[in-house]
Length: 422
Image (spheres, rainbow, N blue to C red):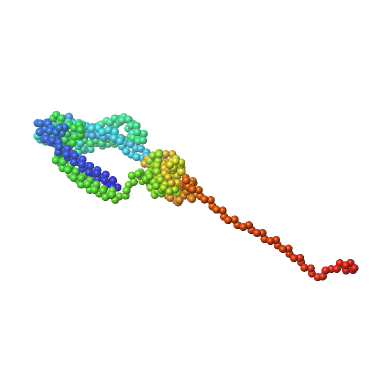
């Protein structure tokens, strides 16, 4: 913001300085009455600069503006080609209208200027700066102009060959402006060549219908307000630049080209087939989510996202969906990486595809996959073997169980002999 204010202030100061130089040129050029010039057509200026003023006398050979036929001392006719083209952006397809200047036809007369003391010739055939132009003709012709000639009033214009494939012609336009030969007063500053004032070879001829003193007065006024206004605006830009947030000179389109670890959401746009490349430094290995947000547009970005390590190995190679958030989880070691966001297949569009980018830290690396933990550092001492645990004594088998006692007999034993006798 501060830079913009400063540019505006410097522009206003520049306009004031231009007016200062213009006034200085008028004051530096010798001034003579038309009668003095008629008697003594010489200049004290080394380059022959000379100024005078007086009433305009109609030229001996009448000059007519080519379109309107208006009598004049000078004219300009600007001929434009009107065109349309179809333009596609991420917001959709639209028809854009515009114009190109094909030619500016100019013409000037040799006139007499007289302040009442005698007349002097002024040659406007090579052009001059006038402040009293009047529009005397303006017309549009519709159509592509199938003919090589088109007519504007009394002027015939030859249409050049047009080979623009993007734009198609819908018409032509002519605007005529001229300086009337009406006898008004005119101040002239040019180069004295013989007894005639002509356009200097090194700069334009200056004229003004305000007269010399009137022109100097308006220049002084414009210079004063320009210097005051430009000074105020420029001074106001200083505190704005001092207290405004610092601008990262390494950024383009809102996102920094140099990124470190987690990155807050920023906005950018893909404007080339190569896409945008960001240099990402990871100071401590861990887990991240790389998020590319494609906004919901009529023609939205289909992002191709790649993340490449310093060794050239691709860590990410993904394609997202239009109008959606593409979130890619990744676990990386400490190091430097190149993150590239581009349109699918290098696709581009007028004005570019807009998108948001953020990198979110989601946690440290897994213990077994911690960056640099896969191999022991060179020269590290081997870990000592753990002492074996003391052996427990073998379990002692319990003694065998004693046999159960025989069951006691009930009653007296039977006498076998007695059984036989019976």
